[in-house]
Structure formats: structure tokens, C-alpha cells
Image (cartoon, rainbow, N blue to C red; front, top):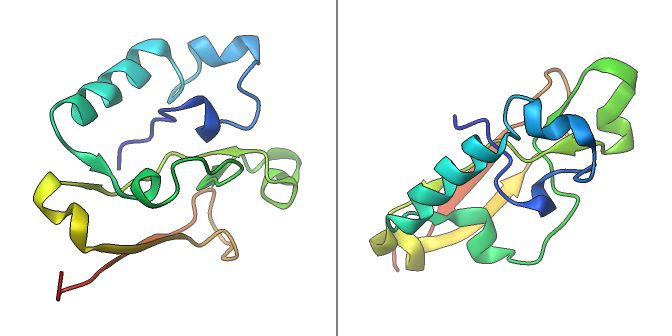
Length: 112
């Protein structure tokens, strides 16, 4: 559980001034996440959906943000490069409620 919104596309209000001080969106946290990718790990969701926006796994419980889709993508599956060809699907189950985070489901193709 990394709890970092790595890319601008992972933040609904990317221009908000408070983000540089907010947990999960500080420049230091985002840069540290980038180091994992630089080390060779693969963000499985971005591997399949490189241009996706509005795909969030966390919403503040204030103001009904999940229903407004005002959130962050904080939950990831990072895979080793050798597993990248086996990544068949990654689902952000934003249809499930009950927590401030939703489940993220990784499906691997064992034949790959």
C-alpha cells in the first residue's frame, strides 16, 4: 500500500495549492515513487491504461467525494518487469463503497 498519487493524472484537483503539503501528493513522495519505476518496477494499471484519467482508488469521506469522483489513485500493483507480459487486467473497483479506498484487482495470465 503505497498511498502516493504518482502522476498528475492520478489527482482530480492537480492544480490545488495544498497538494504540495498533503500526504500522498508531496513532491518528495511522488519522486520516491518514481524511483521505484526507475528501478524497473512496472505500474500494472498504467501499463494497460497509459492515458487514463479520472481513475481513482481513494476519496475523502467528506462531501461525498466518491460520488463526485473527486479522488486520488493511491493504490497500485507494481510488478517486476518479468511479470509485465502476464498482466491481463487491472480493475479499480470504484463501484464498491464502504471505505475511503476501493479494491484494486490484478489479474495475471498464467499462460503468458
